[in-house]
Length: 276
Image 1 (cartoon, rainbow, N blue to C red):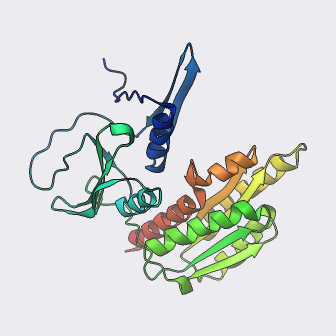
Image 2: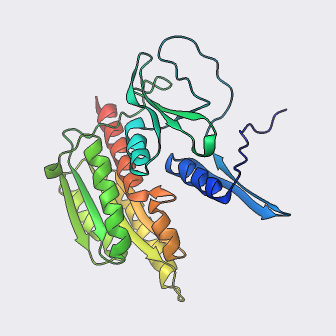
Image 3: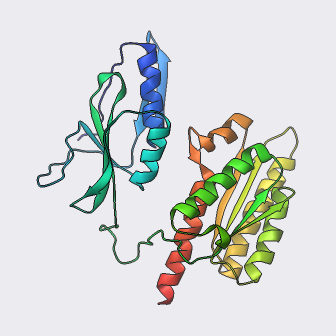
């Protein structure tokens, strides 16, 4: 019984190793196990699904690797910002997808990245992430603004990319994470918004204050969403260190503000779908 399937790459230099690390991190692979012992080191990058696929027909990518992502255009922009080498730019395929091909660093071949234009796996209840015509409110903490402003940028980017207009996104700032549930309650009760996004950053200190605030904010936002029926995307970071927060605000682990906004949008779309 096969337990795993992966491609082993053996970069010749430390520079090539670091280039490959950045390449797969930017594309969105989840960081897996890593090691450095007995004269060797390594790092795995994981994906939800792996295997061997056979295909034939028009517009099939000629590449050594194929990766499916949520949105090929967003990944292409990230790859272009990092200066990665494009073999072909993002374009529509006849089989219902958007696709582009990159050169893998250090001469390890080519990689095709694609996303389907519609979810053919679950066509009945899967929410289509289209925020056109919807109204949103984002509650963001001013405390740890160095992090929360990055989360805010990610959240607004997610909503704008999916169709929302700038005038339909209300931004409300509060002093700290503890005040987020109160502001969110006021906004939800107006009935003006299809979804809310809560953004903040809590860093563990030397007292129990962190645990008290984390538990209260998490519980309150969850209860508020259930009691009002207004979806709330949870983008309040709860981190041990500033470095962890930075990684979750746009670096190694993506932007949790972006993810929270998409989660809120998906529930808002699902709510509309179920009402029909």
